[in-house]
Image (cartoon, rainbow, N blue to C red; front, side, top):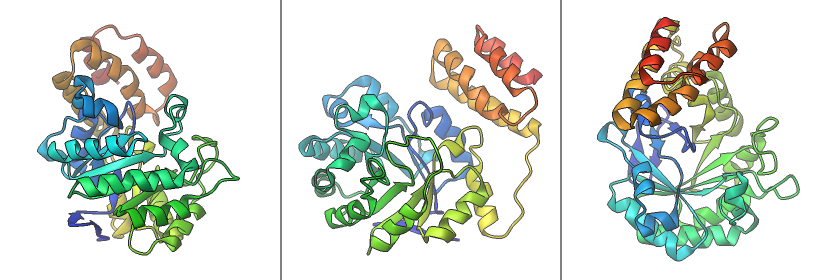
Length: 319
């Protein structure tokens, strides 16, 4: 098994589940924990709301012991706030804290946060240095290849992050300008690995299958894989990647098994959220699990029209 060590934290495997806004909430991570990824992250949270003690933000940081090792990802540009937020995250019991320098969404980048920080590598270093100084848990950072094709600076940021004391850098092979369009260029990940001395380089981008996970490791020599959208509707992806890596046959899951996982996801959502929250969630989550079946588009339309969680359960059972 390919091991990953972040400081004193040894991960059980090299597959890491990404912080995904609107996806990697408590019910999602509860389901994913059954398949034992090496590390999971909660959804991205702002530094300032953490420091101010905003209730909704702290709820996004809920976890239970089945999810360990568990990471929190913070977003912001103020080194002082970063220090305070990282310390709070550590005090909440998290195993890892990550700085988001990769989110391409306009409402984030307009504030200078997320991937906008790629235009100021020295600021990334300053923020990471404060986080590292504040906590004993490993600090990581998530980046993209660069702001655009004229500013590919992830290898430079890899060196800056290493000097600041970060233990790993997650490198997405697209630029901010690309968002999620086009193919991820894994050559940028390889360049970061070549620029690194001790910091771990974790590859990210277009990992939707076990085969893609193996290819990215072979092509870039990266130390692990960060799986993002590939986990949506297939929380078992870790199992498939590890089986492929070890030369074992990947388990073929019947649709009845997939339905069972979807129902489990639904149950976790019902237990964690109120009726309306669970209903709104399941209208879109169902589409993740049924994307590969016949008439998926028709079923997605039906799901969007459901009016109660009782209707959700009946719908899933009747698929």
